[in-house]
Length: 111
Length: 113
View 1 (tube, rainbow over the protein chains, first blue to last red):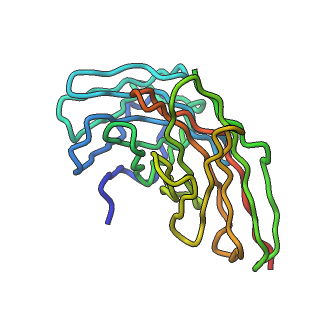
View 2: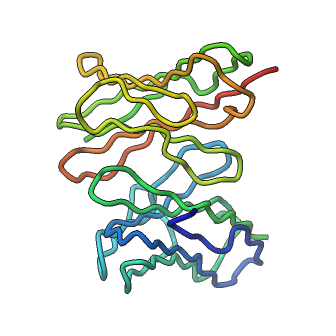
């Protein structure tokens, strides 16, 4: 039973399109995160939030933006998708630092 | 600042053989330690974690890890692997005072028949 949901699981989209990747959690966690991961490679933190109306950029510079209007919802938006954005995007949440719960990921392909 | 090193990028092992995946960390503060597993085209799943107490931690799927503070290590072990254990394994560390997680680069475990 997943407690953190990401949609869509797979997305193929044309260059220049605006996209929003959805992430929702039902655990009431204050902290939420977005990671970018190329196949078989490391995870790179691109955004995080410690609560409603709190968002910060992560270690890896990203052209995406995030918002946190509700505790359970942490969407990621790309205003104009490019082939360089092709990657897997993983959403996670945590309470304190006792461990992350990850979603299943969104695999994005920009053609 | 914290960092995590996973010395082996790939570990091939035959089915039913034991395996150890190595993880070393550096941190100037008390830490929590974690191992996650990622199957192809999936997110990460928590295998086990060390927060405090016993340094030998048992997790899911028969895995265990031992926290060694003097060697700043948290190696993952399984006495007998299965084909289904083939996956990417990530070690992670977080500070007990609220710092974000730091993930290692991952170790790809390939279990051969």
